[in-house]
Image 1 (cartoon, rainbow, N blue to C red):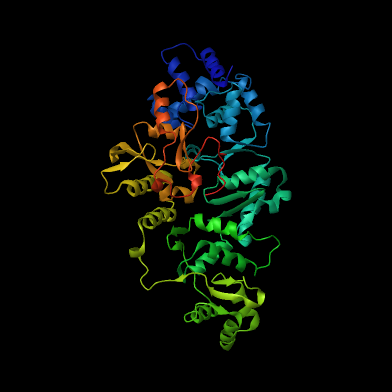
Image 2 (tube, rainbow, N blue to C red; image 1 turned 30 degrees about the vertical axis):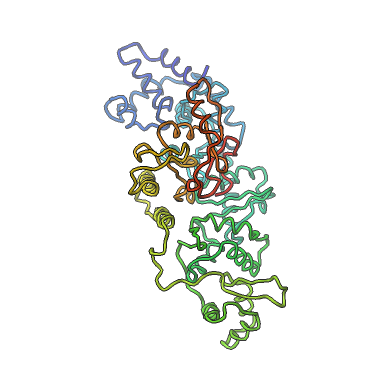
Length: 517
């Protein structure tokens, strides 16, 4: 018998017969997450049942349940705790599935309510709910966060210490490899990697056994380079910029290897601070000023576009700079691209990007860049706005991106033209699965019609692979729907709806863990 059935059976026995008995049982069930609300407050419960105030609900819970229940009144709670304590940590969805498969909870049960029930029955489970940032979960975060974790109380301090080390690592490396800490992290390696990937501010790239990552909201060498470079240059070619950053890192001593240029390139193309345009990467973060030798270096390149080291050395030494200072500024600068193809004695030097124009304003921006900047500006909104208010602003901008000044548009799935009133702003992958850079990218959405495509795509009965529609999960006993799916499978998607990172598109075979953006 499951937890809900045993709770109802206990309440049927312990509550005296009367006009309000059925209502009181429903109140107890609702408060402990056995209905639609995952973590009801006393006020919410009072409002739901029209029963006075929060204090009246407290009195009802005490008199009808808490004062009468014992540790053995609901035996399935002990079975639930036994499953819970079989591991050091859980992803909430994983524990839900395990408890459901054991017949302890229903599909509609909410585990936070079950934990509140465990506490009120005076059982000790020894676990707490946490966000990916290891903050204690709130009502709001449990509702809105994709990944909530349950962590054993006796383990949390050690896990916090390990995660802090992992978060600090990219500061010097630029982009860190979690394998550098693999021995130290030990048994928690998989969990720490999942916490990193679940953070909305992380960028993660898994290549073979290498787990590269960066936190974009923390001080970091790569981001610091960009703050300096884009104070001078309007745009830079991604691969050239990545090679230059990699070369600059070689001028810094550190006990761990720096990331290869390919990983830096991948990051720069998808960073929340970057805009990918036809002319190259643009930076939308704050910029910093150059020091004196860097200013002189930039001035030197006002005339020759490319120079040898002797030319640079002569110019800078005449300015009064010493050899070590010159070597570092020329050979290991994020501002200077070093062409090494002709060998060490024949390095050639040039600026990494294109200089800022005198009139640097929105006139030169394309539609994508304008909307990307509007979306990324939401990151700077103060904490006085709720998560829901920010999400509404975000959705409004994305709707404008697809439909502003339009009466009709084509559905990305079936290709038919519809009134914009019949189309929705559909996320290519669920918004809850997106990190900050993904959900604040205009390319994360596409128009999908309400004539069936929205339902089929959202539930992954069809999906987009490469450039075409593929058959997804099996849909049983649905003859008409299957005919619609048959017509869609194999259809080529318009190129404009394929723009953005291919990882935006889900498939039934993809690992749910985000590995790149």
